[in-house]
Amino acid sequence: MSSHPPVTWIKHPLAASDPDAAGGVVVQDGRIIEAVAAGQTPRTRVEQTFDASRHVLLPGLVNTHHHFYQTLTRAYSPALNKELFPWLTTLYDVWANLDEAQLALASELAMVELLMSGCTTVADHHYVFSGALEHAIDVQVETARRLGVRAALTRGSMSVGREQGGLPPQSVVQDEATILDESTRLIDAYHQRGEGAMVTLALAPCSPFSVSRELMVDSARLAEQKDVRLHTHLAETEDETQYCQKLFGMRPLDYLEATGWLSDRTWLAHGIHFNDDEVARLGQAGTGIAHCPSSNMVLGSGMCRTLELEAAGCPVGLAVDGSASADHSNLAEEMRQAMLIGRLRYSPSQVRHQDVIRWATEGSARCLGRSDIGGLKVGQQADLALFRLDEPRFSGAENPLAALLLCGAHRADRVMVAGQWRVADGQPLDVDLGELMARHNAAAMRLRRAV
Image (tube, rainbow, N blue to C red; front, top):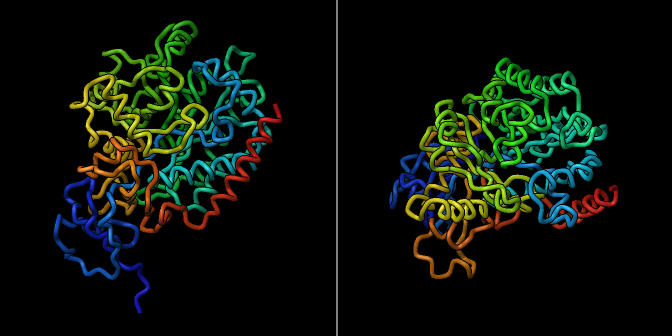
């Protein structure tokens, strides 16, 4: 009797983002082994079918930037109605009290919320390390493995506290040697390489205003030595530009280049305030941009120049950003936001629904340095998101693919990661959602009381 996983046909979807897969995809051993043309049947002998005739089929969405721990400080009154710098200084004193139990719950809640929105590759930028958070990334790896999601985790860092003119309190900054040693340990312990990798690690000093120049330089060297990627916040606000000009005598991108970061190994969160010359330089280097539309709007940071950056050669992906600025971890909703703000900056004909779906899948995968996810091509990973259009918001919709964004899809009905169903009937499998939310809410209350 054969022990291999059954060959499964995701059969005749209502619509698919890739026209070549209009008849669905055939999945075996965690990979797509055939894309079926519209109205056709597979050439491969299939053993199971999943009737997708009421579903819109997308590659699993890929998130490129998040802060899982921030799910504990959503809609936090003292931080409301503030721009980035005062928002950060208000919340740093709360986040300084995080412990590993709280982080584990925050990470699980964020990953589950992302999964339910159709996201199969979650990303996190964790940079708050206190004495109670020595094993934060280890906790996140364990959580991702238990949930069966793909995870692009980053070892963030802060080394410049308030005593040195930075924004964070001294209790959450670390010295450079500790940061680099711990980064090396995590890469050696968890970073997977090659197609199908479930956990990857990257190095992610928080931002130019919270780490030293030496740490930026040494992180770039370590990333090259270990062949991992680099990630940071950059060009998010005009305040940041003024800070860099005052402290370093140069604009943020010039500082990035001076520290060895301007390359195709790097992807940047936000990337809003670049001039024409900088856009060209980023494109020539192949540096990725994690577009965070909701967060940019909530904090009033500005509009990312997505079309110019992509035309110049930058991979452009989408991100939900931290749940204390975007206040959600829903990548399906983020697609709609990206389309709407894109049309405000450009025009409806320039920012089509197909373009935004590409950013959330293939573009995001490229930001993470991956070609094995983010598509429905033969050989790619069987990471799939299937959405039903059976809510009142979709009633009367003629174009199913466009309806996902125009009518506001927010929850996937089925989600597959590496050939395994992780969401069915809109609910995460093997997760007691009510119990998780109760524990998460209790952790959030405990964190707030500690201030």
